[in-house]
Length: 188
Image (cartoon, rainbow, N blue to C red; front, side, top):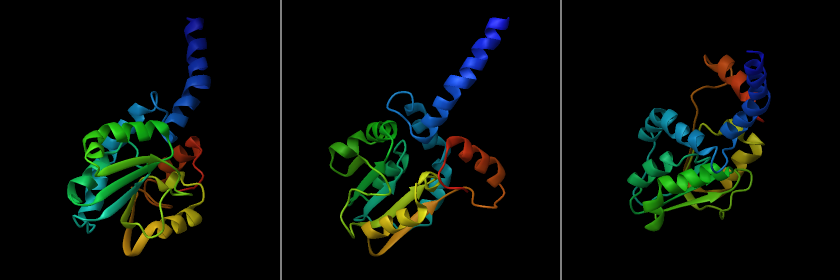
């Protein structure tokens, strides 16, 4: 009985912190289920946000923090004559997003890159629309990262940042505590 308790403590001390890191920055194999979970858990909120956003069929779109790639898939289904790019700093998220959008990637309508919101790998004024769904919590320098987004946005383009909670909002106590556990550089 005492050996089981030791294993539980070892799990909490060793595995739990590792899993928290995987939620924040999914690795290729262990983190993929977290990327898939993000696809599922953010889907309704994403639908709401995109229904309230103008998306033309020929738009060039960037999804920052693309996670498991479901938002890219939704955007590509609307921007049929355009191109959708996804960027994420986690290898596991990039792999999951590429797998989710493999057909559109082969067709040349989607591209998923590994990169950071702090230094986007795109030229100035490239995008008609930039989306970020539940990712701003992880941005290392919120003010400068927003400036970087504006750099790649075309004049007159749209930025949509979608988040379920905000500072001092109803869910802030629970989410704020969880984000601190994840080591989020920004507070909600």
